[in-house]
Length: 565
Image (cartoon, rainbow, N blue to C red):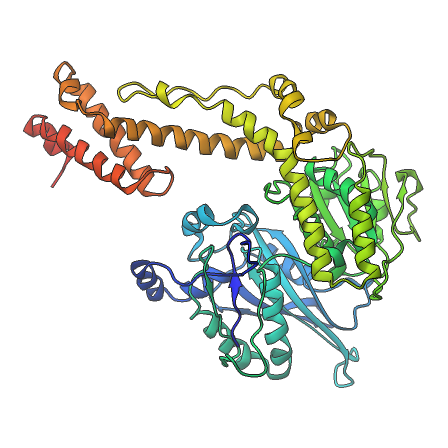
């Protein structure tokens, strides 16, 4: 089957793409390494089964030589099965996120930079966590001692392509449960033929040994590799979407207690996607259990709750996490076309250990007024039976515009801290980026604030003040400062390369100063060639020419040191 997918940013036409290919040299190197193409998409595939004596047990890891630590194996086993409170019969798909524990790294682990530099923040590879995509089946089977067949097929990856991998599982898992290992090996070999993902390109991904094009059944076409059906995820909490957006923006600790792991994982992923295009810098666990190796660390009462969004299904967490400031309890989903009963805002003191009703339990008061027009449009869409994907697009655009309205003033102020280009001269160190002064920024909001692009009223100043204390401000500022520093370095390199009087500059300089220039130019050149500096190819060529010119002016013994044979 062919699966067109897209790792690039959404285009106006709504098309979707993944990688067409890598460069021929890199592709040739990759093909020489066992499982290199497979590793560009997945770390491994696991099968978890239920053993009467051991409980959940890892039955199979593929490729067989991929090594997981004992802690990672244990986490995968527990996170791949719904807990006993969920009562999931039939087939269930969900996802989890777990910390890497220092086992074998993927063959492509050291090569993330080229992909991440081109990928949107939301689609970059996870550097320190594994993402697990699970297809769990529990059906009655009289041949089994427990009377049930219970097994999970798990795709372990560092790519946040939830829709792609769920679609892939829906194709391969039912076949695997019927035909077992030979089927799985064939699928893995097919994935090992896929080109690596390159943002912004589209291709067909053959799977299950069949390539279907212009025939029935039609190929599976994904409009996105990662976007969830936001409207479906947020249906019971639409009246509180903006409050939840603020909690995400501020990096507040939040527990999502849902009836099943599929509901919990999708809602957590939907919440963490609310801030796009801002990178979500906090921890999040779409599905978390009491058996997790980090259970004690994340639930301790000896310190403030960590900045994490936790998806759980066991009511035990209500008692364990009573000290957390925000708990979202979701009831059983109803698949009717009508809008379900909306959860209510409730005080945390009303949380009960048993039989806690659905609600958003928090003392938080939103800074911004609720957008009633959005709720009316969504409600009208329900009444007119507007397709859910259209409802999701409406909701996604609202959240995107809200985030952009919040971020644009920060971007404008940050840009004002960049030194003027005319202050960058070839033979002096580049000037420093001015410091970010929060009071200066807040004063700038009077004439350049979010009110220019957003009609919502409220305490924007208070929201910014709290944002400054959050991990998301720290993550955003570090990223922007890094990009500006790289731009400054690139402009300095260009200034050196455009200087016409390098020979005149060298006349009154000592050999030490000339050698220092060579070493600095070489360092900048290496960084630029490694895509860490945004410079044009012609600048790189000039830089190399300057290095050759400068070295040629030095005595032979120094030339030999700088250019060893």
